[in-house]
Length: 206
Image 1 (cartoon, rainbow, N blue to C red):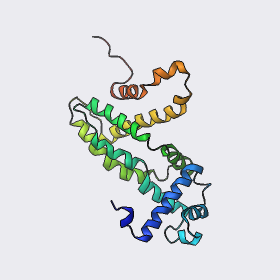
Image 2: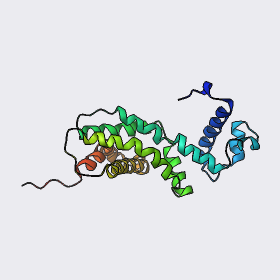
Image 3: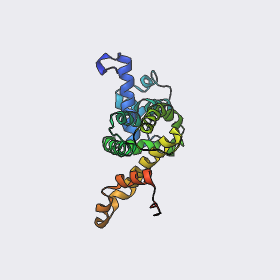
């Protein structure tokens, strides 16, 4: 990966545009952010920004392709330890949740994509995301512990579904819980993982 000092002047300007556009869009939304605002925040004349991007949507597409938090978070799963599939999933969930604390802007970016773009850029995200996820699922399949015959893509999707459901409900409900329920919610991620791995029904005694 190139350092800032090794980039050409034009590339440094391009990266500055993306950084400032990212900050503005995360804070005030896509529709409320103008190319003029991005140019001013970057210290450029309005015409100068069009030397690098043809439109505001072109800027946002570059943000999705190059700066989506997922692309920083998921490589961390390559560092996850665990000799069994169950332990690996538990550690992977905690790793993602922990890293999410460093990306408070994640929900805002996700909402901009879903609400303002109707998830139009999801194919771009998936194109880069799946090559990161599928080897991890295949790795999990080789660990100790029998897995049901589930297609790797579906298993990866289910894991992300578990992660998203935890994340969204934690934001919507976690902070507003009365004190009597906060203690019960303190290990919610472990319970989500338990449901992902074993479901909600007890095995009937034979």
